[in-house]
Amino acid sequence: MSGDAFPLAALEALRRREEDAAGAAVAAARRELDAAQAERARRAAALQAARGEAAARGRELPARASAAALAATVRHAARLRDEAEALAAALRGAEVEVAARGEALDGALAALRAASRAREVLGRRRAEWESERRHRADRAAEAEQDDRGRAGPPDREP
Image (cartoon, rainbow, N blue to C red; front, side, top):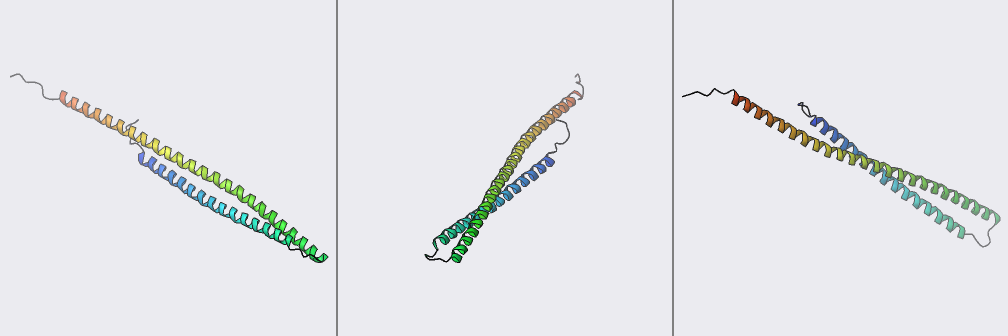
């Protein structure tokens, strides 16, 4: 390593920014995943309610229903079926969204782990740099002491 100052402060600031960004991404991804899961649960409940209503309507046919009443019941059942299909499609979309948010969370966690590993590497490099700097300082002090010893006054004879 050169004698120049190690850019430790800049690297430490960069590491902190990367860890903060990764942590924020993880938190945002978790919030999005929670929201997507709540939406999925809401849609699943709506689908279940629509299916229950359709089943109940199917059992409500009067024994002697008129043709118009039967036609109205059939139309209503068709509407309920269409609503149930739309809700099922929305539920599938929510499930896809939950999976995508889960992948985003995994990516954010991977970035956080990478930033943590970078911090460990930075710590090791800093320790190596400090050790090398101390070693150079010790050698310089020894060399200076040797130079002073050689430059001292000559021995006098009594």
